[in-house]
Image (cartoon, rainbow, N blue to C red; front, side, top):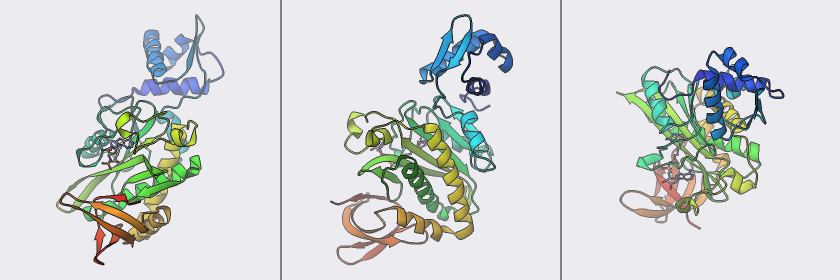
Length: 330
Ligand code: BT5
C-alpha cells in the first residue's frame, strides 16, 4: 500500500453501507464483514462524517447512510468505468500534499498506464512554475492520471490540450454551463478559472516513461478565498447548485479514455481540431502574451496540429507558441 492512502477496508465499509443504504447495518456485522474491530468501525464512521458523509448512528442497532456519499473512493467510481484502462487502478487519499507528486512516485515505481490518484484534500496542491493550487477539502476534484503514451517527450504538450478538451466536454455536458478553454491549460466559466491542468512527465534521453495529467476542478466551493475571488470560481458559484463530484469524476475519466484513443488513432491534429472548436481563444482573440522578459499584444490565428498556438503580433510578425501564459485583452 502507498503510505497515506485510504485503507481498502474503509472503502469496503462504504461499499457495504451503500449496498444496504435503506437499512440499519449493525456495527458488529460491519466489523466482521470487513475484518476489523468495532472500535475501528466507529473511528472510520467519524472520519467519513468529517468529510461530510451523512451516517446516522442508531444506538444499539447500527449505522445507516442518509444518502449516497459524494466521496471519490474507488468503490463508487470503478464499477462505472467498464473495461476502460483509465481508472483500472484508483488510489485514493483523504488528504495528501499533491496527487501529482504521489502519481510521479507511483509512475517511477512502475504503476501501470491508466492508474488514477485522487484526493479529497491537498495540502500542497501545485500549479505550474511553482505556483500553488487551492485545494479545499471535499469541495473540489483533485485527480492525477498516469499515462504511458508511445510518444517522444516533445509530443507531450498535446496531452495537456487533450485533458483540457476532455474536462471542458465533461463540465459543460453535466452542468450546462458554457465552459471555455484558455490556452494552454485553464478552464473558464464567465471569464473566471474553474479548473486547471498540470502536466508533468518522467522522461530521459528522448524517451517518455510516463506522463502525469493533474486536473483540479472547483466544484462545490460556496466562495473562493479572498485573493482568488476576482479570477477564480466554482461550478456551484456559477450555477447556484451543488454537483456530484463522483459523477463528474466518472464522466471525466471516461472522456479522457475516449480522447486518448482518438489521439492514438488519429494523431494530435484531431485533438487540436477538437480543442479549437471548444475554445474561444483559438482564433481572433486579442491577447497579451506574458513571458519572463516582456509582455506583448497579439491576435490568435489558430492552432497547429501539434497544439502550438499561432499568433500574429501587431507588427504583423507571426509565431507559434508552444508554452507560456496568455491573457485576454478586453
Ligand atoms: C494550474 O496551474 O492551473 C494547474 C492546476 C493543477 C491542479 C491539479 S489538482 C490535482 C493535481 N495535483 C496537483 O498538485 N496539481 C494538480 P497554473 O496555470 O500555474 O495556475 C495556478 C494559478 O491559478 C495560481 O497562481 C492562482 O493564481 C490560481 N489558482 C490557484 N488555485 C486555484 C483554484 N483552486 N481555482 C482557480 N484558480 C486557482
